[in-house]
Amino acid sequence: MSRSGEERELPGRLEVAVAREQVLSDIEPLDPVEVPLAEAGGRVTAEPVSSAADVPSFDASAMDGFAVLAGDCPAVSGDEVELTVIGESSAGTPWPGRLRSGTALSISTGAEVPAGADAVVKVEETVPGDGKVTVRAPVEPGQNIRASGEIMAAGTEVLAAGSRIGPVEIGLLASTGSDPVLCHSMPTVAIIATGDELVPAGGPLGPGQIWNSNLPVISAMVRVAGGEVVSAVTAGDTRDETRAALTAALDCDLTVICGGVSVGDHDHVKPALDELGAERRFWGLAMKPGRPAWFGTRGDSRVIGLPGNPVSAMAVFAILGQPLLRALSGDRSAAAIGRGRLLAPVKRLPDRMLAVSCRVAPGSDRVALDPIPSKGSHDFISLGGARAIALIEPGEGSAEAGEEVGMIEIAAG
Image 1 (tube, rainbow, N blue to C red):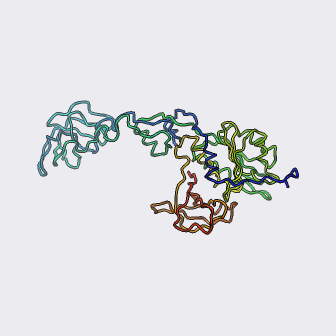
Image 2 (cartoon, rainbow, N blue to C red; image 1 turned 180 degrees about the horizontal axis):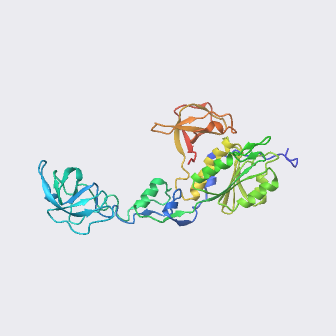
Image 3 (tube, rainbow, N blue to C red; image 1 turned 90 degrees about the vertical axis):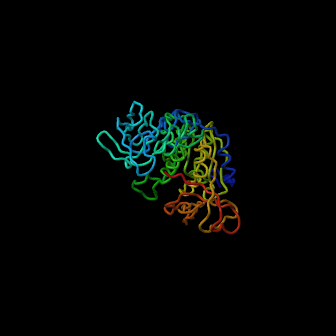
């Protein structure tokens, strides 16, 4: 019986695929903003990015040596030709003249090849003299020269719209002169952990208290998925504290609540959300762990209610929260579910999906998922090294070793 004496409403059993569709439906990426390249890591491009110039933008030497006319150099091995050295071209300081027949120019790797020169002979194939250099090897036109535009012509697309910018993409953009970059805004996220028993990690524990792992775990997952954590607070198990925390949070693009969404006498999240005008889309997943998950909206804001047990919270956020943040940030691959192969059998549940935390085994041409034994959804300690969640469809018997299953990567920095 409920607090009012009426029968309690229990969470439903919505299929996970349907829940993901509902979470990702009607999402438009957030408005674009110009971002300095140095701050663009983790964001998503809002338009195609093209090279601002040819790469390289000039003929450059691939070696330390001498810029020459190939026709002045030996035709066959064993011959030698002496040339007059008339100057130097170093990286960032080109030689301004034009090279004439019978002359050579000292040149550094990356330096601009002067007009008139059509090859670079590496220093190991020369003998220096007083204002002279002896070339002791045949030289072909174009030898040791990085031609202007050979890597990329000006105007070539570097990144498509909807590309997430990581370290490699930063390098591509920098190498093609793309700064600033038009990116989608980062979704703002408020995180609330509910529970009188929660103490910040490292703080002294009183009777019946535990360290709060949900706030730092979900905060880390939010950041790696492309969100900006604007607040992360703990609310006690009272209606007033829960409502106050939600009131301060619901203007964000996404509000994440850890705990308080089930049916206990101290679970105040659902009635507080009702009072604050949040519209419930679903409550309850056909999944273990994570059945009490809640999802709804208020205006343009989204709300995800996670179970309080830390393993459940992480699994549900990986399956629902990560793709939501990626979609809001413009990532076109947000809805993708990977595939992996189990390294050990996992017993299926007859009536709902099983979300199994897994280590990812190295050295495989396919993602190899090593299921992690756990004492329950409260046992976060066992998850050391977990990098993915295997999605075991319901049915009889077991998903066997070698079987291909759905897989969600756990966002990890």
